[in-house]
Image (tube, rainbow over all chains, first blue to last red; front, side, top):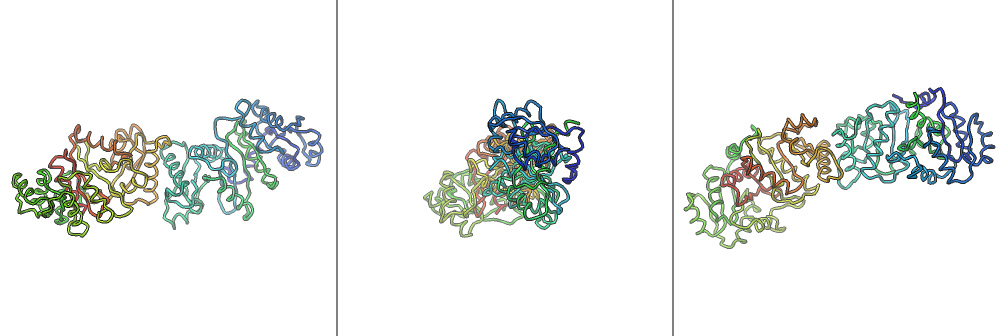
Length: 300
Length: 301
């Protein structure tokens, strides 16, 4: 079981040949710098305007790459996605292209890389105050998921947890309280998912909810509040009902505490790396590694 | 207290709680008077019947009930008789209300009357049937077979709480309550499974105490260990339920009638949620079940 980013990076580097990553519009200095740092993890296929990319490559000191010259954004997106569809690349990464254009190509019914699963974002956080990695979902893609969508998001997260070696992940259906309250919709959905898990409808997972974050993170809090939960103090995954909850929570951890993070988009034929310009160099590297380890398992 | 496992045991259980006062609304019909007469004779209740005094006396005498054992309050008008009986319970002069010859709707209207009735705000009037069938080793509580047509989640929570109280009155310390649907899986396309799941979770979280609640369960899983082992459902309730909570009146009503008419079931019933237990028997009920219903109400008064 991987419990730190150091271990995630080590696992990502444990390959003889780095997997190929299709970079959708590589004319971004930030992206190229991240790829240079990740040179022992992924091999980039840079798609975009060659004239713009070449000078940036030199600055970024990116040692090895392939390049496909293309200027038109729609074509860049389609081309990048087609590389994954045709198995020329294992990973997809957003460069300078807008998120919207890339997602449109990913979700395209004929030429996209859908799998029938819902796409969802997962943030992985390592905190010195916690004994293992924490997964947060969904703070990046699904705004206010329905019950069915939450179940899809959960399934994506659970299968990702397996990549980290967590066989039976413990999941918290996040709310502000641990009681079921018809006035708080998230407590209802969490209760329902928890019963589904107890009935074995969700496979190998321990889900409990509604739970407030303190109970999920701290056995002591659970004891004081008298809540019996198999998840208390040992949570692997937080599943929330609204994008703002996870987005704000992870950003608070990043900006106000000492954590390491990374993120990846799940549910397509390949993991998708979607870096934010404000991400630190470390976060960018972590995100590439998080995506790469999904494929190394299959390659070995 | 040993759990009551047979309906006959209701009689002694009720007696052990001391004699209660029974207000019978418009108690003029032979079936009601017979059942009440028997409850008086057994020492379970003192009875106060409202209605036309002469008719009551006459019917009692014709059906081997000594009119002098009954307290008769002469109110010949049906609606006034109901109001008088409800008033007796409201003022504490009586502990139990029972329907006589009046239509159920008028009787219920008397209980539900906002100013003069018996239903506290936020409570829900609901019906609990206690069934004894030869094929099950203990009593089964069913709700709601008669009053609430399609209970909401909040109403189901109330029904469950009343059921727990009645189960406790029967000496079942930690009743096992099955929240029924047609399947044991949570399926968003079957709304009844969702309410079942939510109420089980509320029980896990201590929001509903004094019972073990599991759902959704199909009826076979609730009462048959064989089904449980075939379907491999892990549940503390399955196969050993004390109470079955139904998603709607149609399913509940059909099951209780099937048990009575096809499975030699016998029953007692009580209306809960009001400030006092209310007896609401159906014309088709046997005299025995009317009598046992008085005993059940007395046990809960």
